[in-house]
Image 1 (spheres, helix red, strand yellow):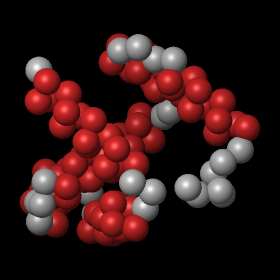
Image 2 (cartoon, rainbow, N blue to C red):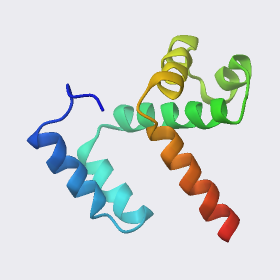
Image 3 (cartoon, one colour):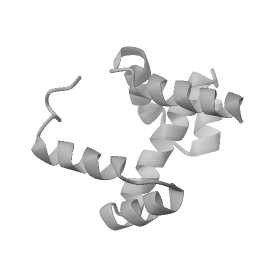
Image 4 (cartoon, helix red, strand yellow):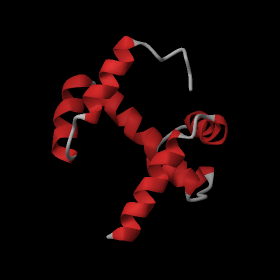
Length: 100
């Protein structure tokens, strides 16, 4: 894990996020916390990661998300050399989808 982001303030933020129970609560909290641009940027990066994990090519990802190739490269680097956070989420969502 990246020790550069680990501190009491980040712990507090993550603890707050973990109290949210549904999508509506997430919308309320994140709309208060983030600017529209920040939230759009986060959701775009997540969509890029999702598409990369589904083996889409860069040109399709650019067309679908509007992300730059630089953003796609950064997300791809996080998937391949990061802390495995995307994998945790994708695996859990995949299990949830299969259970439904």
